Image (cartoon, rainbow, N blue to C red; front, side, top):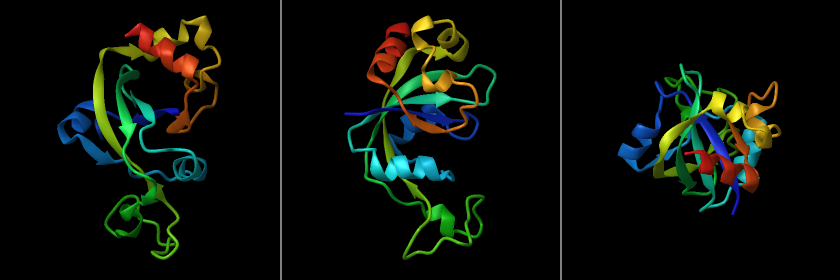
Length: 150
């Protein structure tokens, strides 16, 4: 089993939205590195932290599981979508997504500032300078430590 962190802005899609829907496509990925991780590395049953980003208090707020193999993101073909990609072809889609399933909310949000204060997390990908990826793998030791903070 692998572990991941997946970011979403809570005003666009929050942990409560996922909790209400139970399973949802994680769409809108427009980064080749993330697309490749979804395609090549994510497996059904892997676990991911749900991270609220670009908000007043960024935090790890929940856990979800990967519920599907990667498949074509339909928004790339929708001319009315902000994720439309005129260069993507239906027979060779450029962008992929996975479905995610709600597992649970954390007992309390583990805020970014709190994570920054833990020396054992100094090499956690989320805290690395210049990290802009919206999805990335999480080491098991980091996974366990973050969960110990809830």
